Length: 308
Image (cartoon, rainbow, N blue to C red; front, side):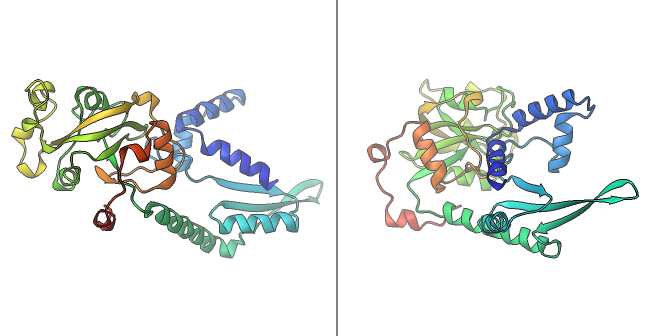
């Protein structure tokens, strides 16, 4: 029973939110249920809007049976200690005055220990995630393109199509974001990420950060001229200026072909060191990057710089 449930959970964990909505909508149609699939799922998840990067990261499993063997409960307890969320609910039918009534009891975790079990499992997951993300830095950087949604109008300066076509990434609105962009130096290797889509580009930094109105391209025109109306540095204080970093993109994907997997590393910061082992291995394969041929090992001083 527990293995079958884990297979189902694994299937759900690899689904996108859009695919889950489609499957649920088909289920509602077959059963003549008038509920709206997306609204019902958003309400269940407690979200105001779809969040593709968060969907399927943690899947809860509930096993329901008239009884549970010792072997099964031992397996469930062990799996819960390793960060899964599996609950066992026992249903026992009784006959009462010609009716069938059910005695429903949660036996794992025990009701009085459920809150502790949930908090302990979450603490365990966070600790393991922290260990993975604090792994030794390999020298690759995570760069957020600043697109808050894949449907961002292409006229926007941070749209990936513009970044890809003109060779840059941008950030601004405050020193927190422009300052992070200034950490990148020529020769640094970066993976670009689009929120709610995935990773879309790999390249090397060709030019350090500069305000977009002073950032000139190969034709001698400024980035501001190329994307007239997209930037308004002249209307802002210097602290909130939009900055750009030049990037020679070596391998790119369209937004609808972005690379991701459940649990892929993502961050709201404009720039941070990419330490997550599974994400790095995934990206090296997807973007066809041979580490030994492109990247020397970070120096001791680089490795010791606090991450983000």
